[in-house]
Length: 387
Ligand code: HEM
Image (tube, rainbow, N blue to C red; front, side, top):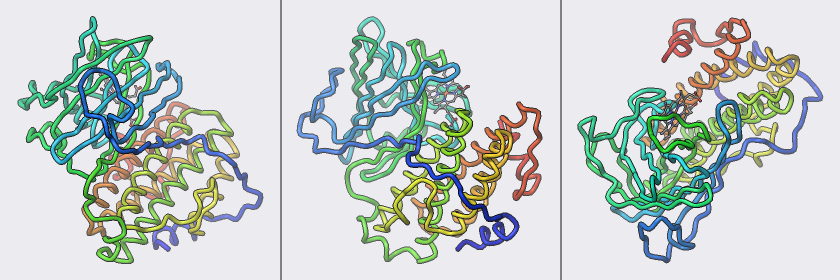
């Protein structure tokens, strides 16, 4: 059991009986379909049945400012190149951004469209949280999309392209076979890349084929028991957030809870990728609201009971859980000796900081000032006032 949580729990836990149990979670992760790519890859704007080794369906519902849409991302790779297809529900632009630091920042972006029957694919990089994203060439880098093509029909746009795993350009993320890559995606109904996404956006992860950094299971012996426990704990802590927000969404129908439940599912998937890499088994059965770790169970139950009292209270407990999450992620990050786990923790930490900002900002919109419960005031202000 994590000392931070034990300490938190002493002050935190009130025992409630009869907590709501839910059968289904609205948070869905993108299911990846993997198969052997037997067809030759061709940039022709048509995704062949066996042209790619992996594909996943990304979906984002309609919400304020967004009409809602989906994109199927397909990919394959060899030791040199990444081949990618985007098939999105729009006549405008489609984009993928690899490995953002936070929001859109530092994402290696590919933004593409079909204009007058001709595909346009731009190799870009995003320098700020919400842009600007500029062509690598304009930043002093190079255009590294070596081949591309596209097609458009019935409100659906398909783009296929190729780039090197390691382009040598500092504005491109460097990949290697077997790597797990975090990504963001977005769709707009305009083909001009100067216009913001207004159809859909989201985040996902993709894993490249090939040698893992360490073959599944074989690496387990090379990390300490402390580190293994940490990985499993963080997976379950992300699940706690997902389940809490999913239940709060069911009660209040506020999209912040469904959005962030979806994001927590993506965090669970990112932790899971490392857990699988080290041949470890996830705790429990991933049943909503049920946890192996009894500290997390009690925190979940207590915060949920409080959150069900009012919408404002729900936003407060969600912010509080993000504070707890930030503290635990920092602790794991500080003690981790494993490079890919550290990268994953950094991504999750950026996500939790972002979530805390979102909840605090929604509370401010309701004229409620949120006081940090666990983080010290300076750190808290640093997180919520970052632009
Ligand atoms: C002209 C181009 C763009 C502008 C002005 C822009 C602006 C913004 C803004 C203001 C937000 C905050 C949320 C909102 O207002 O709805 C946002 C969020 C987001 N954008 Fe963009 N964006 C652009 C292009 C892109 C591209 C090309 C991608 C994907 C590669 C992307 C991915 C995202 C994602 C995933 C979020 C959600 C971030 C989060 O909450 O974690 N954006 N963007």
